Image (cartoon, rainbow, N blue to C red):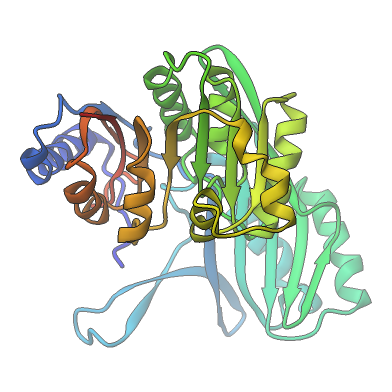
Length: 367
């Protein structure tokens, strides 16, 4: 993996190259003009993780990158600062190291540090160890919380010590509205908050004419899209397999006073079976599927994309809103989906500047 090198003066040039590659890759689908949403060129990641390197009396962060001299091994690179990370993370990186370097209890066998921050600077720091954590660690860690104005979690094998709480509250402004999201440690959240706001605004725009019909959402995570899109639909039914994400999504619905959305903990495969009446049970009964009139399906799958059965499942809806973190799997899925639907909107969201990674949004309508 290449560690992104921030070259602010080259950002627009590199984004133009990325956009052109995407246009060429998807030209066979005859999409409309690509809508490009740039990221801040630096300090755009709200969460990062670093390994901790112990070298004599010194202690520092490292990340691992490809080793051209030995492709079978990664090589560590010292990271005293990281321009990709939020300004709050960069502020805390040296402060944290300085605070624990001469504290044997906090330092001993510290293996990894994870930062989770919000746009307003709320910060959760997870310290991961290769040893059990005892009372003396907790006492010193609480002092460190106060000193750095952060929340701390300690982790080791079969151990998790939450000193204050295990989440931050992110606030995103989208189309003049404020949306609040609980983001839990060690669970998936969108890393680039500015781009996340652009994605939510775009998704709201392209589904703004949904009328009095319903949305079904697969892979809803902590309700990121669910909350922002709820007002565009009569009702929303969202599914997610992660227990932690489902709990957060339900909390987020309540926090944002969303009353027309329901989140069920169920895999996309099981949900497909429920729609076909091949699966029953308490969770299926709770969804009250017969009461919905779905016009639109939203999918935001993992990098592998959708399998053939899932593509067939979502093809029954009039509109498909597909958010993708992998253009290759998106293109493979579109080979199937465009036999019944055509692309009417196509967006590039530069979630990860200075890398080849692309976040895409595609709206398809039935032919």
